[in-house]
Length: 270
Ligand SMILES: NC(=O)c1ccc[n+]([C@@H]2O[C@H](COP(=O)([O-])OP(=O)(O)OC[C@H]3O[C@@H](n4cnc5c(N)ncnc54)[C@H](O)[C@@H]3O)[C@@H](O)[C@H]2O)c1
Image (cartoon, rainbow, N blue to C red; front, side, top):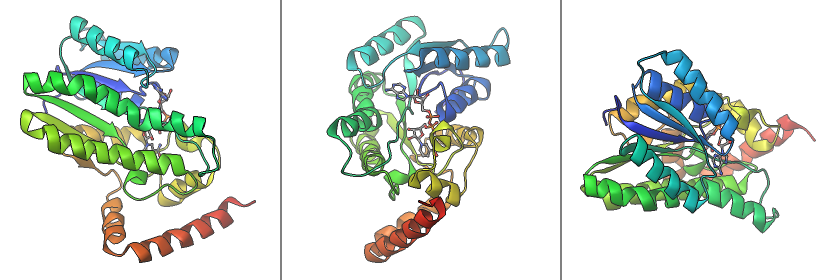
């Protein structure tokens, strides 16, 4: 896709990968950016930072406070952006949450993770894909995770919802690709953001052990992939090999993951 002048919405733009993506799209891609986040003040701070970096004469940068799992709010954001800034050409569904624990966690928590990590993408696509098909073009970026291709140790709801997000991205790419809808799926392993700095749960020990990337580097790679209409974006290229190993011999892969879990439990201590 052509980023220069394109109207792009980035969700989860107040922090981490979303913030870096919004900045890269505006400053390096020349895109018009809507920085959207449930943290409205954080989104405005991110937008203001971009505006001050760009100075006068740069593309328009605005912020929006929005719960991305609220369908009415998403519809209103899409309508507002299209009325005031122009047709949305790129939607970066990047907001995500992670909760530690497994099936013992309460349904309310599973629902919350499901709503943000999967249903937000379903909702956004429901209202964007028909517009994009009518126009013959549009690009959806879903920030999933390497946990959506492999697994996420210590966090069942994250692993499961990220697998679902990858499946949705593939399904939309197949079903709507012939009508000009492009999809990219960003699957990083570990990125230095508040999500990985949160606490010392097992999943965090896992990503730290595997090496953390800076959000700005992930954003730069993502811009390149978007320009090339590339589906799978793997900032940690070794994830492709892990995925092949998982598909090639599931039993051996499960044994290896158990071993990794045992060593990380020792690392994180009691
Ligand atoms: N950091 C990593 O190691 C890593 C690795 C793989 C994938 N990811 C994914 O990247 C994305 C960004 O994560 P991050 O590491 O930058 O995390 P982060 O916590 O720094 O940022 C997430 C942002 O999403 C916002 N958000 C949460 N719920 C929302 C909602 N309902 N509506 C709108 N905004 C909401 C938060 O306010 C926050 O600003 C997530 O989808 C995450 O799962 C992160």
